[in-house]
Image 1: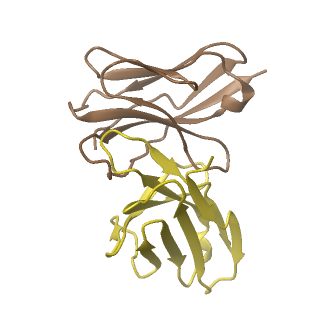
Image 2: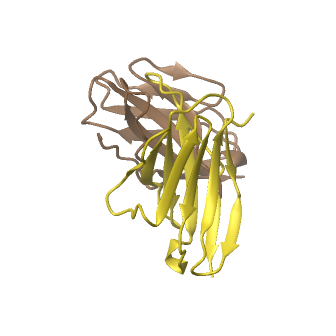
Length: 112
Length: 116
């Protein structure tokens, strides 16, 4: 599986936007970029995913670089409930039955 | 609502006993489910891929005789930790996908196993 690189931790003030970066320089043309987050003592939760174009949903936005070697997860207004570990994962697209391989992720702290 | 139900949420067992964890896909039939293990302060580690109607595929270093996986129906996979020891204490998480190109994965809420 192609590797991703994320900062170990980030901090944000409540109600401010948060930009979580992810580098994936070895991404292949069929890899989807997935983001999940894990709150304490819970299973991971899907956030967003995309292939080439930027994506928006009710939780976040995903900005994908033109060369696809990096992406940024954007939380538009961080709340205390967004404090979690965020995982950027590449998933081979053609097979919907491949497992997700988790890296260390970014631990986001939100300050009130 | 929840797509995946995992039971129990937590369990404490004595060393040497066996523990069964259930993972149910509530929203769709899942021919494939995945089992992960997570130790404190660490990331999720894939243990095995559970295939409906056939043998599970285990990752390197995971003992198949210790972690028995049964995927007898399209909505249920079970993980049995046999002869549990304190070092098996961990957070176990299952995952399902729709099996379609480019779709997301869904996770259970996890099972905290403590072996005393």
